Length: 268
Image 1 (cartoon, rainbow, N blue to C red):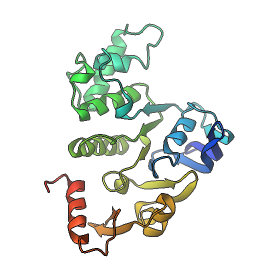
Image 2: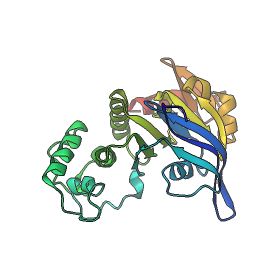
Image 3: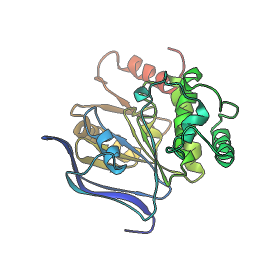
């Protein structure tokens, strides 16, 4: 494996019983990349992440990590039990102290404080996670992953179920982490609010449909093969804007304007 490739899968197939979730997927992630995986519900996005992180075994094919590479996983916000009685510091400590949790050493306490400060969460160490805003909650789970000092940060739908402001906060956070050298791999359903801002996209629908920049992947031909329906694409400020309706209809301009306002987070 090339020195700058941190993980790769080759002809990967994932199945749950007789149900094939992912078939013959080959891809790799290089050091310093920021990659988004997009596709419709049931396309195998989460199954791909689970296979890459070792949560499920490959039915066929292989997953390979470079020697010593560690992955930091951030689950979907919607999958977290926010009523579980745990503080921000304890969330981070769970990655280092599973056998003696919730005990934390002085060094780990200092390291946790440093990670939280880097992510704009200084002073929140003793707050219960349910007391935080949506953006703060997502940052806590990113901090938890970063506390383990991963080589690759892996996020499953980081903007799912959050409002526009929180989505912008998450995008800004991930861009900042990437600018500081983090390698990031995520899944997303948000083509306009998140995917179009990423350097590289992998479109999947049980198999890889396309792999490239947003300009190469967010185009009508690729999107129809990925989502199974025609989608229209506009360009605004040099970025593709995907519309999931008939652009030739009389409502097209109003719909496009509404989509632009949604992306920008401005009122209707």
